[in-house]
Length: 173
Ligand SMILES: Cc1cc2nc3c(=O)[nH]c(=O)nc-3n(C[C@H](O)[C@H](O)[C@H](O)COP(=O)(O)O)c2cc1C
Image (cartoon, rainbow, N blue to C red; front, side, top):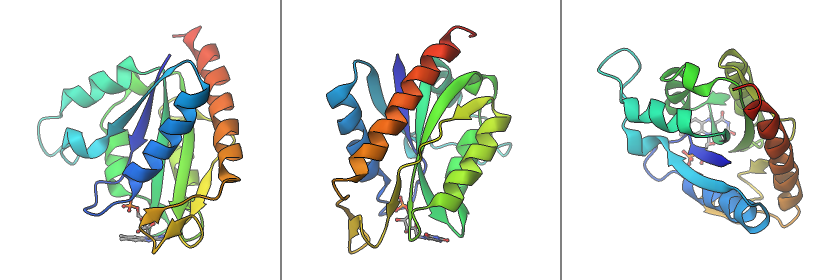
């Protein structure tokens, strides 16, 4: 199966690529599936409804069997770039599973729960385990990602849940 690790932040100086690469590294070490970074920034998505959509985004979302959302917390919610990316496709998301990885000063869990709600409307099932990284303890100077070794356990749990649900969803697509 093919999984997209979706970087939700498009901010200059963002830390999301470091978090995405860490998740990709763990996934590829242990699992016999394809994991690719899908960077929202690369697609230069217009704010939904304001210009011609970039259908490359829809194609990418459709061809993947599941997703891992790298979710940052801005003002107690998900980033607007991630919400816009979620809104910019519809059926392409349907009947798939997703893992949600978050970060922020409190682990980004408020943003993660928002993503879960939005995914439900897009017929994407968010798995239970949400690896949540803390800006104070899993980053140096809030910029260099140095997660505690124990955090890998949650990442592996999330991946196991994602694989088994994704196998199940394949049967109804
Ligand atoms: C506009 C803005 C609002 C933020 N609000 C929160 C917040 O409510 N809670 C939190 O934990 N972190 C908050 N942060 C800190 C971000 O989570 C942190 O900067 C993180 O690195 C952002 O992800 P990124 O670097 O991938 O863009 C905020 C950052 C910005 C830029």
